[in-house]
Structures are given as C-alpha cells and as structure tokens.
Length: 587
Image 1 (cartoon, rainbow, N blue to C red):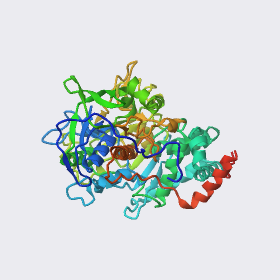
Image 2: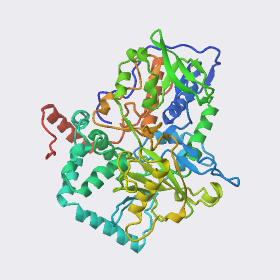
Image 3: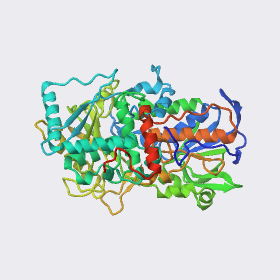
C-alpha cells in the first residue's frame, strides 16, 4: 500500500518485559540457534494459529489457549448424530470459505502447511469456481457471470444458458438507466484516484450508500451496484459501511479480475470441508513444531504487574480458574471476547484498548441444507440480490472431487450440501413476516429455504425441490432464537463509518502484550481471514522487535495498487490539502 496512514502497520521497538515461565527446556531454533522464551497465544482461530505458526518456526515455545474449537469461525464442524454405517458425520460450518486472489498473506501460510501428496501444501487444496450468479426474484432472469482464469477455463454453457445470460444482461440494462451506470463508473474513478489522506478522512466518514448516491437511483442500481456488490465482495452493509473499506476492496478485486497483483483467481474455495483440507493439517504441523494446545480453556482476565502482563487468568474445562504465565502474550481472540479480558488497569496502560469498545459486530451466520439430489444451480457462488435476509450460497459437493459425498458422509442418501450465509437478521422475511432473530431455529430454516426458492425457481425451471431436502444444520453459535433475547456467540466485525480510526495496532504500550485478530489495523482493513493472518504477522514482528530477536521478520503484503494511478493520487493530494474535491468528482 503506497503512502502511510494514521495507524502504523508494524510494531516499533520497545523494551522487553513480562514474567518468565520456569522449568521450560530450551528448544532448538532453525533461525535463532535456541530460545527459552515462551508465548501464550490467547485464541485458536486463524489469527492465533498464524501467530503460533510464525513463532514456532522461529524457535519460541508456544501454548495456544482456545475456548471452543481450533480454527475459530473458519472451522468446519460435525453435525451431531448424522453419520451412520462407518461414514463421517455431515459437514457443517459457521459459513462457507472464500479465499480470493487479492489475499497474499493467508495463501503464503497455506503453502507452508504440509499436506500429503501436495507439493504446495494446503494451498493446493484451493479450487477456483468457474462462475458466479446474481439471482433475481419475481420472474426476472438471473445474472450469470463467468470467472475466467488462465488455469481455470469458463464453465461450458448450453444454448439455453446462453439465452438466459443475454436475457439477464439486457433485462438489467433495461432497468438500469445509462446515466446511472455512467455515474457509478465515475464514482469508482473518483475513489481510484483519491489520495490516502482523502480516503482516510473524507471517504472513511462517508457511507458507501451515500458515496454512490444510491438513495437517488433506481431499484436495480441499489440492489446490484450498491447492496449486491458490497454484500458479495465485502460482506458488509452498503448503508453503513465506510466508503474507504468498500472502495479499497473493490479496487483490489477489479485488478484481480484483470490479472494484476493477484495471488490467483478472483474466487477460490477449499476442495473439502475446512478442517479436512486445512485446519486439521495445520494443527498437526504446529504440534510437530512443539506447539501445545489447551482447548476448552477460556481466558477471563489479564493481570498487570510492574507495567507488564504478569499472567492470564483462564478457566479450564473443569471450570477451575488458574493463572498461566509466559514471557509474552498475544491476544488473538475476536474483539467482542478480547475486550472483556482487558480490566481497568490493562486499559489504563494503553488507551488504544478502550478505543476497541467502539468497534461494532453484527450477525452473519451460516446454515447448511443437505440434499438427496445434486442441484443444477451453477459452478460457484450465488448472491440472492432480492432476498430480504441477504442470502449468499454455494453448492459444495461439485467442488470436492476427492469426496464421494454419499459414501463418505451422513447416512448414505445425502449427495450435496447447499451452504448458505444469512447476512440480514433484522428484516422481516417472506414466509412468516418475522425477522430471523424473531424466528425459531426451524422457522429460520424454512424461511431461508423459501427465500432460496423464490429467487431460484422463479424463471422457468425448478432448481430446488422440497422432496430432495434431507435435513439442515444451523450454526450452533446462535441461541435463543424466537425469544426476547437471542444471542450469537460468533459475530462478525462490521465497518461503519469511522471504524478505521478505532482499530488498534498489533503492538500495545504494554511491553509483552500484542494483539492479533481481524479487528486490528491491517492493510486489508476488513474482517477477513486475510486480516486475521496479517495481524498475527504484525504481532509476531512486534514481539520479535521487543524481545531483541534476530529472526527473520514476517512479510506483510499489502493490497495491490496500480502504479499508473499514482500521479493522479499525488495530484489529488495537492487538491485535498487545498480543500478542493477530487478532480473527477462531479458530485
């Protein structure tokens, strides 16, 4: 990323501190010779596992404390009591994985996780869907978009599918006035040529909805260009999201489509359930490096002594409280859980921790439908543009070529899993007229199924049939649905205007405490696995600085920025300092 921002992305050098752990033998280090320094990683999601990975490879003694399950929100999970006849349980998940080509840091980590038969490690388990679909309701044709890549030719289309694709494009063009399309293109140009100072101030305070003037435009403009794009690409709400966040990601995705600055295709997913393809091999590799795991251990508090963290108060699986100590501590929990462990003394030691109270989370939760027939939807993700609950989905079995679904999972009758993300939980649905939070779990499943059919079965063919629905699985992190007090134990960080300025650095003013998680200030500026991975790399770098280590620092690769636009950004910086709008901003 060119230029600098208010937040430095790497920790600066400071004096080392912290309580030592006694009785831990030294471990050999390929990079340092040897070290007896210990690190307690508090949280075992993508951020925590990344931190453990980087530290263990540099010879540190690492213990990871995780309250629920390793992998965090990225993990897959078994559907209880669903496997028979020696088959594995049906695979469930918090939400489907999406690892686009704009990611660089997470793919680098995946390449370094061994996997049997894969020269490129776990990274070789990534596959590229051939297309995506914007599904319309009310009888309108769906918008089918191929995703070509040199090693990933587009899906073959039948004559009827070609007819439908042209109909969808013409239909959308007919409903989208030319002046609106041109205006949207102009807004993208404004952002691409805006300097960092304008992005970090003006556009950070401007909702994407207002930036693209969606309130003045047609329904199609709002649903496709304002809401649809932000939900499908950035997983956030157009009406609230910062233009800086949305625009930064759209810029990277646009150049990804052009093959510029990309690690791979625009859309990549795993070729098996997440734990099988990624998390379990990762944990196995980390154990081989000496990393120890304490699963079922919940961090309750951090104690401060002599200006440093003296211990972490944890609750073990039996419910007993104990204090664990280490030389260094990396807090790698989601922000809503991490900030509960920062008592008044810890917060007083670093004011940026109190700023995290202003960060917001919301519900974005997955539900899986298990089917007894394959669904003729498409080879990739679909976005149900008109669905009240902002649904996105993918049919998974076709992307798992190494799995025979009915032979490997469930009771032998399930042949596919339609994994759906529900992004809007506070808007009435079409079946019961209630919000998702007001519905029971069964009502949520029925409502999501009804919204899927409303978008997919409305233009001349039946994609989803009630007769093929075997069962469903809703993320167990959601509880109390249909009661006055529903809860979601695994929420998603969202990005309303101003969020960027409340996100903390990885290095805190407490010399042996470091932060990792998708809420930490990182180049991608979005709650993603890439953000979690990048923040962990930053935390490790800050720890290495403070410990005086000579080990190689972790690379933190920023999002791609087209160099040919830099002269225009420099020109815009001059205009910004003079109080003038961007040269292309027609208002």
